[in-house]
Image (cartoon, rainbow, N blue to C red):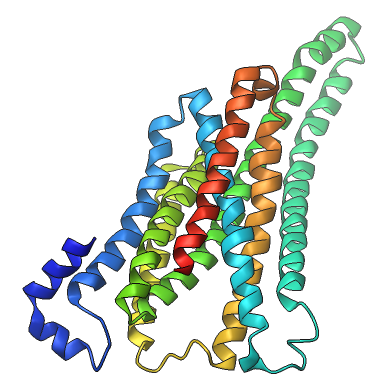
Length: 332
């Protein structure tokens, strides 16, 4: 990384002089690094699933690792930042110092995610249930004059309709999970991209680039696994991947654009960052525990295979601890 920075400085010293003022540490090379890392690592994490989706054991293990990363991101990285922003002395004691707004917003965000997922799934499930009921009624009418045909129709088609309903419900749930998870990751990605773009010190940029690479790659893996399970059309997959990959570079661009006038300790900036971080933390914590870990760890394939079960728990711990240890380096 140091060589990349020195090469950028040597290639265009005049550009650095025009870009920077005083102790502002900027170069076109660093700007390109920010955009490149933000886009490529996220896309690589998601594309990784397109190669691994046929490997059942790898699917569970890598998804458990990614879920651990997402869980630690919510608990260790985002939520403490939200508390720091909303309890800053710059905001004053009243009302920000009298109530834990960060935890409150995170709680509401998790509950809102549960409600949105529950109502959306329930709506689609009720819609699917109407179709078999109508067909079942037709069979009953046809079976009045012939008991054999009616019995035969009921025995053959009933399980088929039940299986279709189950598969359809699972597919709908996977699609809702992937979309909500992407929303939570995108909010966090924009904020971290904004911080990276507005950073002026080289000592601040280095840990942010490393953290961003790690975040984007493994969050992309978790999101890619959900998108793979959702079985979207190719166009939808491409749109979701591009949307995820471009949000952080967009945040970096906005951060660079407003860096001259941006003051991260201003009350408005602290409130906006704190609330968005709290909401993002609530979404990611809920999704990691309920939709990623809860669903996979209760899967019959996992429960019937002790080695796979132990491996998934181990990779979950490794993912969570790896992201947690990264917070030590970020703080230096």
